[in-house]
Image (tube, rainbow, N blue to C red; front, top):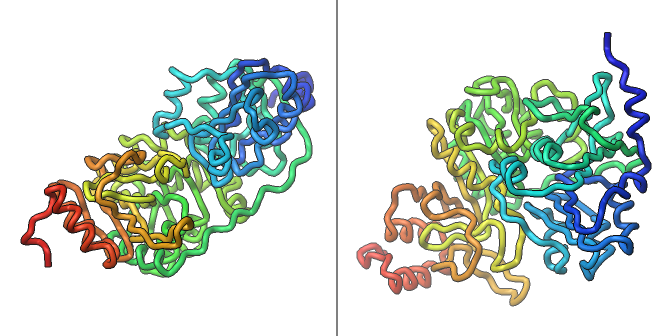
Length: 447
């Protein structure tokens, strides 16, 4: 006989205002990630601004608006933090209303278990099923460990949340929940995939020859991964697998083209694995109640030892700049926070250890500055004070529209030569001179 949870549900049901009243001055409150953002509770908490001081809130990849950040520009009452900035959270950082938390994603659960305080977690979930479980949906990658650590767990039932099948920790039982909030929610924003530019397709075209039948793909977010997905969909490559921290519309395109079957994976065979998802309504519809999909915590998805078990693991991520030593800046421009460390290091290590695996860092060779209107090289002589995401000792393939180079096992002069070969021609002479000044250029190489 199935247990009836109606009475327990009613006993824990609160208005958003009642539930938000448990937050005290000085508390740490967690909003988890992506669609897990508790819209009604955030609004109710922001309304308590004048009653509270020094309440610290954490989130990640939240589309916004975040009322607790917007309502208090002085930050006397609420202080917002993110461990991977969305475009909205990046703008909050620009306004001084968000502080970045450096975090390597496969350690996400361990950070919370051992180091991070959570007084209250507020998380959006799908409606409770007949067994008393609330599904974390596309927020599975992070929500479980946070709820396990929290002193008080409040779930906000969002009727729009897709229900995602999972490997583990994709749900929370009502017995582990302190309060439940209900209410009407706006439909989710329809984040359409970024349309690849011609330069993105050129970069993708250099990567495609490295992707074999049966390869397992991790695609980051942005126009270059979208271009890779687009070109694969048009290619003869078949029987690809999905193992990615972030699921985007690129995977939906691969599925629709018949390329994504997951049937040759060494682990989780037949299942496309992901941690979190951000994208279109069509993407969420595809993930909803799909037995060919499994959501896991990031401690599993991003752990290099798990990634390494997948043969022909191909990781494709973007960056802001690379220097001639092979160091990669992927999360900031100077001191300006753009995104986060995320899983780039995890997949560099995991894909490199995979049998037949390859890890690509991609970028256009140059960019046009909004400040001076001039073009600047993304391949730099040497970083000076920039935040390094990936150390030179772990960087594998680098790709621009001028080709792909492999830096593994290369000396300093070999790295300089390879990177200059894929720099924009306009900057190559300058980079050669800079390499000479740093004594990482062999004069015989100059052609």
